[in-house]
Image 1 (cartoon, rainbow over the protein chains, first blue to last red):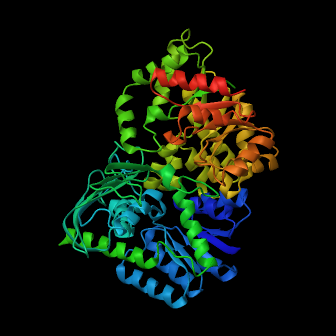
Image 2: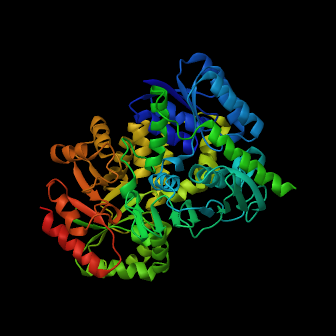
Image 3: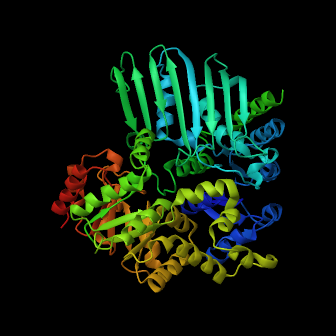
Length: 337
Length: 285
């Protein structure tokens, strides 16, 4: 079993604790957070050892891997320390606030030869993986345009005051919501080369944007639109959708269903001429422990299996997440031009 | 418990397969009257239990019931708390402490946190009790014989191995509300093990049980073995696997497990409600 720790006990950190603790390859031995309240709950109700200082924890504990789920501005220092200790690292998204720092971490992780992963969980959703397969098989012919969207009800009135309302600390819709969509576009369709016509809109927040709209051009020349808004209360929870259109058809997919329009149909993929609809129930494997979605367990499982065997392919590496950070930087720079 | 429990997902735009269907539901059930009308047709078909989340709009439904005591005589509600998305969205914006401050009454949180002292176990319990009371407020005067923790919370506590919290919850629901504690989970076999270890005997557990194994974590074999051999009071949910299985086939499968006491399902049309109810009554022994 790999001795594991979780640093940062917010929403994702707690979720990781539950998944790590029940995973057959992982042993949750310590947690670390600066908030005394959450740490107190762990002290009273669980058997893990608790730290408020990650450096002290790295010094005192024999660890194999670390899950970093702190606010983004702390990622660089913590991940660097962990890599210096030779630990395998799972880091929450977005990866880094500054591309040069992210690059340093990518290089260091390669030098150390450790497993490195970032928590872009959409890469572990059945519908999006099927989408990627269909694109790779050329089902759409020449893809010429795409739309990447995400909407949800995070900030629906004026207020705020945590790190998420500070752009300099990794808050805002661009870092939080749009990063998922950018990463998913790159996963399914290819790397993004340039951005244009970018609008970062403040709707209710004063320090950060609540919506991101932009044109995107991929390395392969395909054009697309990004439309992300976390102040849309017509959605009950975050909802992410990717649409791609090509000379042979069109695909529209969210986390629950994928709708495929094929001009000719395709026997190998069981696609009829016209519309075929497949659901998460057809495309998602069961997990051993479920919390909020199969993808959260599946990504931790991928991380654990990558530590266990070099043959296991890591589906969301530091390097792929750094590409997303590069696009975020371009969107931010466009705005300040 | 009744064999047939009527659920509320359809009212609050919860559809596990399609965001588009969710939106259609949100439009259809824009008004409380639309919800009440479907509930009334369920009652007219002989359904007497409504199992629902502590969504803000349920408070209005409860008002309507209190105002029409004759119409809702003998009708029961099984509350499921909390309405998780309310908290998940709040935590994304405000953090955990910010969310607790937002939802705990008055200045309670600051009182606990005064002087930066560590939280004692009794403070954590007190906070849990206050959050339960806040969620239960809307049901005052309504018969709530079983009270559930939602799966996100159950499974988070389960995953972190904080089984004492289950015991505290269990005791508080019995003591304060004179009700049976229930647990919703996506991890039935593991939860049952942990509850038994904690001394909670024969618990009411609501979990996904369906013919294709959808959201039956750990696999169908261990679920089927658990249903056949272990002592607990199972409620089956997601029996249609979000629409992937036809109703007849779906309910027939449940008939293999005589221990299943109740089936939770939601539907919007009287025809669907009638059909599903009849299937459940025919197949469940």
